[in-house]
Image (cartoon, rainbow, N blue to C red; front, side):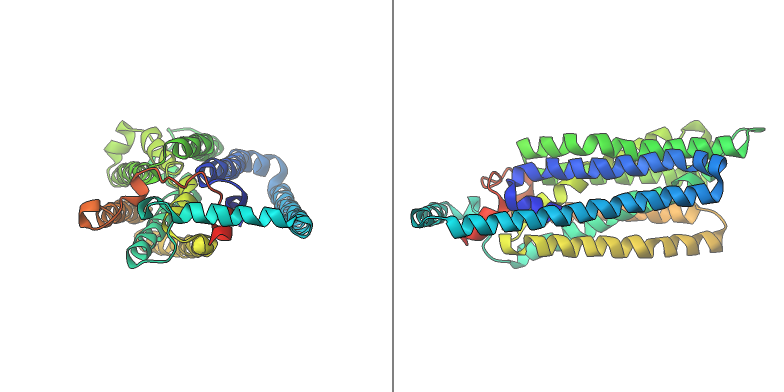
Length: 342
């Protein structure tokens, strides 16, 4: 909802950076929780950890109230401006609309939903859901997975091993926290979000494959530590997450952007809720995370194949417009202005 609200007042080229900033705050919060959870549990016990979690939930609730309050203030201000607007200003939208109509169709935002655009949107939803599984759901089991795949040395205390696993989880979230605003700003300036997402899928598939191989082969886990696959998977997230809303604004008519982004978020939340059930089932029947890591690697590979199919589907020689792999001419227009002009 926040991203869609920003799209009403900011140009599409600025959305990846702002979405990256929002994501950075989320990643920093998760990374801090991963780093502090074990020490708080050791020092304050379960009750102290519950108080810490309640305080975090209270802060989130207060933040939601502030967003709701500010949105009401913005709506009230817009109503006052609309009432006090003089008649001559009504000519400006007409002039702007006439200028938009004179553009070439290839450089204009989509005015209606097409079959090709819907197919590309479906692939984006699928790949974003795969990214949710490969990053967010992986983060849920990251600590026990590291303790099982890269066990502690002989004689090392279990608390020290758990703190080290928490530090790895901290690093796993800090990489996208730092990278999301940087990648968002780069895509806002350069365009070509499809190319960035392609690299995201490649890094994700390679990193998850290394984790799966390390889980199945103990010698490989000792030969290569968790740093390389962890960096590959965590670096894949900022190459995709901040760019999803911009991809939708490029593909879909302005009046459908918020609904399309909301539907994609719903699908992400559904797979985020169902995937742990599969991993838990695989863990129970196999007794380890080996089959679970194989499921993660397979999902990353399917996401890569799906994105390659999208690029083929949008290839100019096959009737597409190479929509996501070029800089669109209307990225500097706020979505809200496109709505008013339609």
